[in-house]
Amino acid sequence: MSELSDLYQEVILDHNKNPRNFRDIADADKTADGKNPLCGDALRVYVSLENDKVKDVAFKGSGCAISKASASMMTQVIKGKSKQEIEVLFDEFHKMVTGELDIESDENNLGKLKIFAGVLEFPARVKCASLSWHTLHAALNDEQEISTE
Ligand code: ZN
Image (cartoon, rainbow, N blue to C red; front, side, top):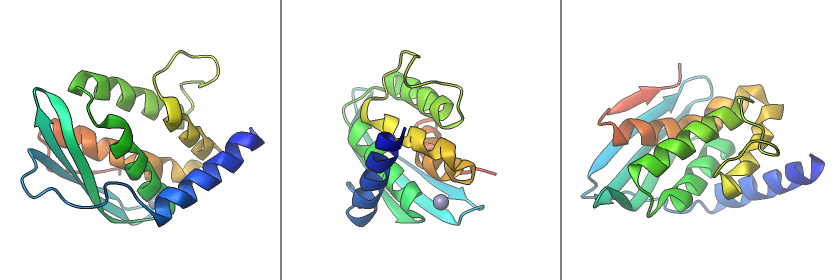
C-alpha cells in the first residue's frame, strides 16, 4: 500500500500543479456546477458530445489538490468514451473511494484512476475525489448543479 501511497502523492501533486484540460469550452453541449461545501471545492465541468461520445471535456474552478487532481485525471480518462462507459466508470470510482470495490480483487475498468483508492485512508477527502465525477454525471444527465451534501 505504501508504494501506491507514494504514487498517489506524486500524481496528486503533479495534476494539482499542472491540471489537464483546465479551461472552459465556449460552446459546450453540457455543463454543470459541482460544490463540496465541506471542503470548499467548487468546479464547473464542460462536455462536448459527438455521436453520444465525449469529443471534448474540460473543467474550471477552485478547490483542494485532491479535487483538482481528480477532475484533471477524469478529463483525460473520459475523452472519447460513451455515456454508458462513463456510467460504468462513475459507478466503479464511487465504489472504490467508498471501499465497496477492492481494486486488487474486483474486476474493474479504472486503470490509472486506481490511484484514488488512496483517499480511503483519508475519509474526509472522499467527497473531494468524487466531486468531479458527480459533476460530470450531473452534466450528462442535464442537471445544472450538484452539491455533495
Ligand atoms: Zn477538497
